[in-house]
Image (cartoon, rainbow, N blue to C red; front, side):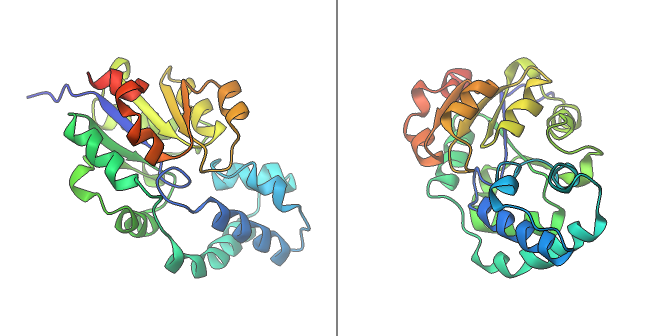
Length: 220
């Protein structure tokens, strides 16, 4: 029997889990390791974009060496990963209201396991798409397109929750509306300009205001 529930595709890093600054510092140190002196601010504004595209934007060329160095530099932060307050509550409430909750992340399977453990909402999560399901990273729409196709979701009854302009840009290419939170480091003005349909301080505020939010209206 087809599953005709409305679907919510939820980004993980910077949205549910407080990792964007860890990634920023890890990339900054990684670029130093390969002899590239770059400003941390130039890295932070690109967090949420796929690693391959971030490297090209920052140093103007591809570098597998940079990606390997980032993985090494990010490793010590993994024991400090924490979910944002309200992350599990939001996912649980979406599920309670009948949503099909899908995590949509560029993380690999190993990192995803740790992120899911930090979130602590396994009963609320229906499905997951990760970097192994796609060829191109954000701002390409592949991660969201993979979710739509893999789980046979109706785009007209699907929304995205994210934290960066790259989430909004990627989803917009599929005409998916995006609700954003400010915990990834993007400003309200940046997210509004990118096309977010609503912006909240964090997932806790989104949970508190769910009834009046675009997500709440989708699930009515």
